Image (cartoon, rainbow, N blue to C red; front, side, top):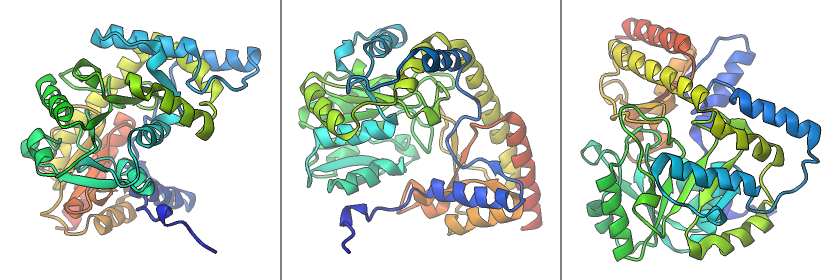
Length: 382
């Protein structure tokens, strides 16, 4: 029987690593999870209480395709509170995680055969979703000189484009765009009639600076965000889009048909998330401690060069002096130490064989133990 060619996309390697780690654990081995970008903390207490209340008091039927109006209004208020940007709640769409947001945004903004640029290294699901939709992916070889971010100069070398995806803070590097850099990208996109898609899922998780929203520099950009990272709600599968006026109805029609609505219990619970910043800031303090610990100790394990980790909860490390095969390298580390990390090939198909990613979203105790095991492993294998 036929299998559609659009399903012929690369695997999301971090999920394969997670599966290998879980198999090791199931066989009785111990595992320290530094591979997956998932907070080890539960959802905030207020969110959990709201979910319990919804179970008791709500039928939990479908909502409107764009979600509960109360939640959309809280998100709009969030943009006023955090960024001083006014957003009409009618432009906010609640989605089935950020992944659902990307599917809706890409379908609404781009046609098959369009060309969309993104930086490499970058989040692999952008590339794979675009490919499944028969949209041409234009990878920009970003380097430390550009903050591993796209620039107008890089975009100018890419030929005709219909879209650009940016993430700040970025996965896997943790790098961020300044307001001036974001403005330059937005201006280039406006001049060249290119749709800007801004992934802001790691907003709130920054170290020493505040992330800029594309809403501050563009009226035509698409903004994607999620409750997964800052609000520690990965499994609740809830995200959102802030849409320009011309895409509100197109995205709504797609959402009605593809998803009907995002999970109602998650929506009810997420309304309370915006009253839980104290817990979220406590998580941020732990990430900051984990980041400092790894940056201090990993050099003793041979990891000496990192992308500037200004936000998110990742360290992207150059391992070219230790291996030419990051996949094999990560497999060996897991087998020998029980420390699960992600090969850079997930994020950069051309250069990722020389890079690995550490996630420091777990406990500080796990970070310390992982660093110690890697130091001992390096000493044994010199």
